[in-house]
Amino acid sequence: MTEIMNDHARLLQAVKERKERENLSLPQIANAVGYSPSAISSFLSESYNGDNEKMAGKLQAWLDAQDAKERSRMMRPTVPGFVMTDTARMLINVMESAQFDVDLAVVAGNAGVGKTMAAKAYQARTNNVWLLTADPSLSSPSAVLQELAETLGCADKGQRRIRAIIRRLKDTEGLLIIDEAQHLSVRAIEELRSIHDLAEIGVVFMGNAPLNGKFDGMGRTPEFAQLFSRIGLRKNIRSPRQKDMCLLLNEWGVEDNEARDAAKGIGKCSGGLRSMTKVLRNAVKIARVKGRDQITKADLETAWGEHMTG
Image (tube, rainbow, N blue to C red; front, top):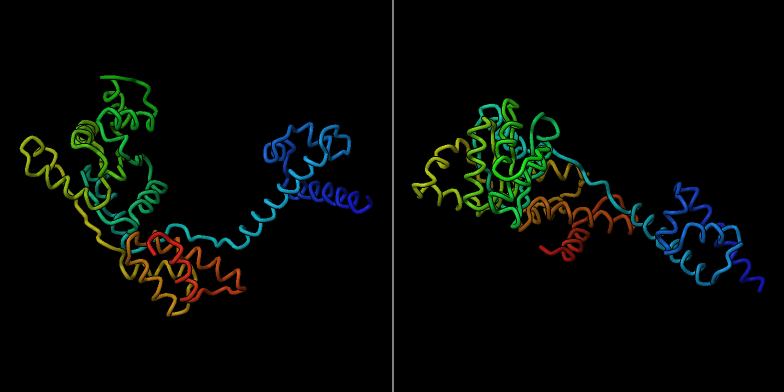
């Protein structure tokens, strides 16, 4: 009996210490364990009239989960933010030209070459840049216009929506970036071309390799000749550059030459820099579990084997 009482006292103390250390509220703890805040409060003050054993089990499970989360957080590496690679600098130059020369641009390339990161970085540092990410549900002109109107804060609907969009964009010297643009229908692209003309803003279409084929097909169709002729800039990025990978590895602090070569090999595979970053993150966790600050080729091979591209 004494041992049970001691276990109960230790549990109460552990919950109270965790609550204070992480500045948690009773509702937060209650939501995590599936009880009301008043029930948690009563249990901690040793005046709970319900099933104390069941409550204790729930709170112990919550503490165990908090400990596991803390261990994971300690092992989790800090992923480097945006790195100004050669490819990123080239993409930002394209965006600047499209914005300030009021041009249409098309950027196509394989996944993981840094297109989206560069777009987000450019948006963060430049005024009047709007970034839309397309998906299969945004293929039609009406869906694209609705998404754009919501992004811009235009409340008008129907035929008035495009007019509201144009009024909002006119005289902003802005840039509209459409990421994953390969999902757009040809009609939706034509609608955005019309906004480019009428609002006099730059537009950048970014997407994976199929985007090139879509625009090339337009060039052979008389009805879309107006759109095709408007494209002033085109860039095709097939794979990450060696220099890009070296800069990222420097940011990760990878010093071992064998590990660097292995990481570059991963960067050349499907998923590019994105896959390389995910594998590096897991490799660092593996190294830390083993008490090391530096990753090895073996850590990368293990992490890659657990990744989809491996």
